[in-house]
Image (cartoon, rainbow, N blue to C red; front, side, top):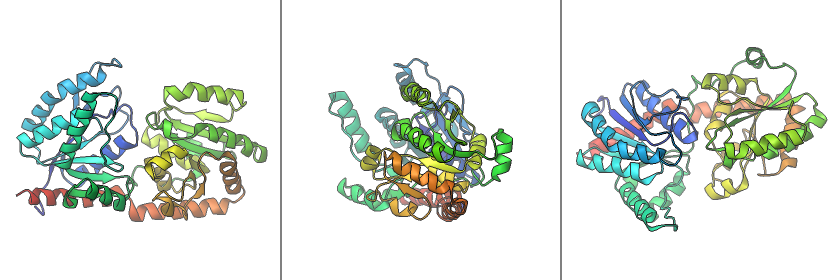
Length: 401
């Protein structure tokens, strides 16, 4: 298997038109393995406008774009498209990412019928999550868990020690598990650019103190948007020429109330929401900023014990200083304490003081940005991650013989 190229079928129920950290990670993995010379077919729902660059070979499952039946049309058509992909592409490995039970059960069933190993690419700690609302859902989630136990697992955004502990508890064979701590970075997409050049291209003023946050619609609920506004008001007292830029999409459930708060606080001219940005434009905005923000809510930190995010790696890849929320009990805390300024979650006063500290200390901003850049390049690039996953995939093919 040493020199054999893989034929990998990537399957997800996530929408390329509504990218979040989960989907970005999955697409980047597919592209990284493609760059290493492997053949990849990406099977996903037909998107409403592609906002990520998928692999060259894609197969989109059509669906009706109505809120309550969109999921059911994709699920109903998925088996037919799976069969077509298996016969036409003839993969020797399947990798699936997504949390819904039925699509994964279809992928798992066909992997057994065609004798193809399947890997569940999982973000976070994989555990049984049985709802108590209705019995059919319980049954589906139980079958999902059983199928997962009989698959291979590629886990990211997690603590390897904690993943191993859960695997032992759930009696999952450790030999079929590949665990990676945190996401990864593509330094060809996110890289440092001179701040003046970036601001010139975007038409942003050179003297303004710019605070930046990268938003995704799906992940809005994990971040405290209000605290950024309250911190911005305090910063304006020290630095009147300040600007908060929120790049990307805010979930409609939160956007209306957020815009209302912006208006009530008199910050209409001081807060800019760009809407969706391409990765190229996002790279420019990150490089144009003085400080990048990651204000994670306490509930998310306590629940997941993780304070890293795909956007954080993008900030680091552009060598920008970061102020982020964290708790000492999070396993990522020791990663970031020397390469960013850490503040307690949901604490507007601490966030404001950290931003004021960085405003008055350009050398500290530069030092933090350079440290973070070196750290992410040394430890968390997609080239290195793809090489390790490639070894794991080749091993599991050999293991099955």
